[in-house]
Image 1 (cartoon, rainbow, N blue to C red):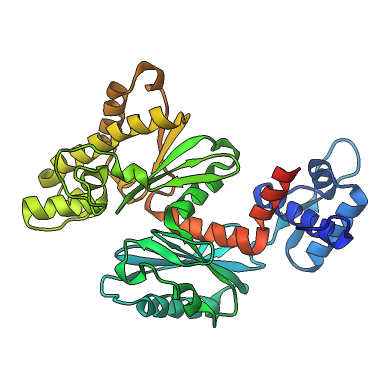
Image 2: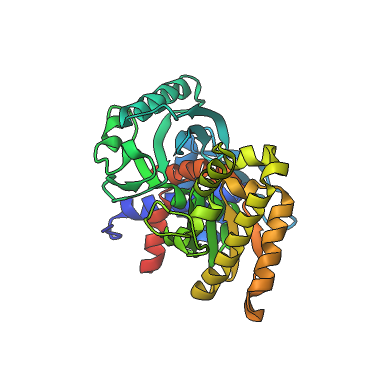
Length: 380
């Protein structure tokens, strides 16, 4: 528990508040920051000068004002430090270097179909990290690895769709030799963080659907994310064996996993969503069926959660517009009158959301300390 009677602790929190404010609104002056954050002008001047001297904040030009003394515009120095975000998918590992503003500086993708151990993933990521460190414009201060899995706070992977990482207690410790901290995060949480950052204050009480290789959902609230893997297992069909052991789950009809199984059975060739788009004339029936089942599952989800909007991300949200339009039409016809007008959006990030979110989690954890600020807001 932080002791606010100690001046150094209060100063630390105020420094974080200034950095967080400049993260979203560049060009504020010292006086504007003092007013917005309710910090007296003398303290604000001292805090900003410290941040300028340390290279975290840059001073710009004098502001144009009609009344009063013009202030100096301030901005976050996005090249002061960098972080790395990693998205471990079932077929590809995506590794990205980010600036403090969340802008991708460099991205590398590595096929992982031949990986058979956690050491293979470590070697792949470690190689990319060394490459990034060699040309990064600033020191790397942390890394977040997102995996489609559930895990403990200590970094133990519990359930995972990648067999060699399932129930791994040692994977996070393979990175102990790096000169910066490393954390793990569920892919669903990472994707939600990316959306929350993009929408900022407008995203609240929204159901997020991660429509990719596997299906999952979360409710995004103003101050927290409530994840659930159960959305994938809403029963929608009379056949189709799911990896959970049940028959007819949404996962078997609408997910990338389900489409692989169905295409292998129908065409003798396991096809991804991207493969099906390339062979659309042959596969359109399966894609329409996937969109229809997802729409009907969304009706159940909306009725049970009472959310005010739906946001669909993940790789399959990238399907051509006609499938998305068909899903909207099925939802409208299937939902009761009170739910028909709930807006359904497509994600800005789509399949890139998990990688982007991993970078944002690393920024929040190792630089902006967003969770600490949110916790303090709740306590006050």
